[in-house]
Amino acid sequence: MKKNHTWTKMLLCVLVIVCLAGCGNEKQAQQVNTQQAVTLETTQKILGETQNYTGHLQVVSDMEGESSQVDANIEMNQEPLRMKIDETLQFPQQTIKNVTYVKGTESGADIYRNYGDQWTEMSFEKDAAMASVQIYHIQSNMQSVLAYGTNWVEDETSDKALLFHGNIPAKDAFSVVEGGKLLQLAGMGGMAEKYYAGVADIPVTFTIDSQSGQPISCTMDLSDTLETVTNNVLQELNHDNTKISVTKYDAIMEISKWNETPTIEIPKEAQSAINYEQEITDMQKDAAA
Image (cartoon, rainbow, N blue to C red; front, side):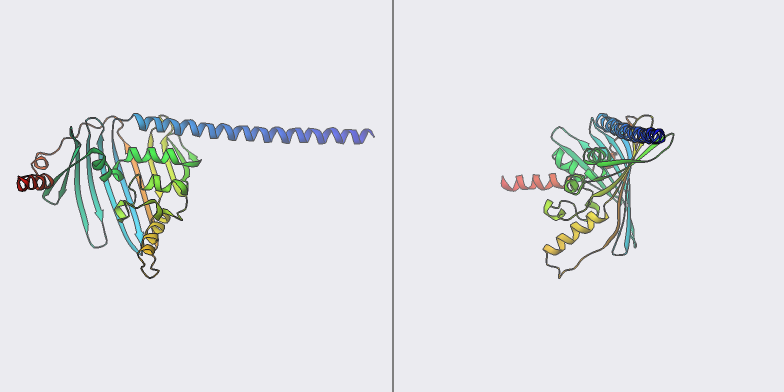
């Protein structure tokens, strides 16, 4: 009888230890999740308060065995509004270089683009102007990723950076992707939400500075999204069940020089460009008179 009592006490001790260990692991997991939330919340706050920055956008794609790559160096001033986009597009048979400037005005914004040695100028309402360059607005697109991203898991930690994996739920893919014009370079910008039917969750990797909480980079795997949207469009156009395959479509955003980017100056040669839109407007007014 005494022996049975001893075994009972030992069994109870083991159960207590197991329970304590389980509670400890659960508490530790909760602390980790809380820490992630605080860190990502800090990052979101920093993005919201940033007045100017320097960034880099890279879009790497492979569709139907044909690869291409876009690299854009970006400078952004929030107030007064100025933006510079220095872009290189690499295709199998050619390389194209473009430079774009955005300059805020009292009534909206002017966009200057350089194609080779030729400058053009167009005037827009501010929202329309920013929508046309939204894919390059890294700060705004990172904010959207953090706002809609879920299931963040810390992959590895170093002294300088924290790496998180998460995803954009399929139900929010349209808001993030179309809102950020992230398929624009593949010719699928401006698509209605119905074309996003059947998309999967979007894998996202976010890297932030472990000391300051400042975002360093964000990578989005948009291959499934682009393939689904494109095939939905083709299906509606009755292309005899034609489907395309997207092996790779990654959007990689990097950001730096927080509030240290100097005011962007519009080149004199750009400011002297012919504003074709204004010319057409003036001609129409003259004709009406």
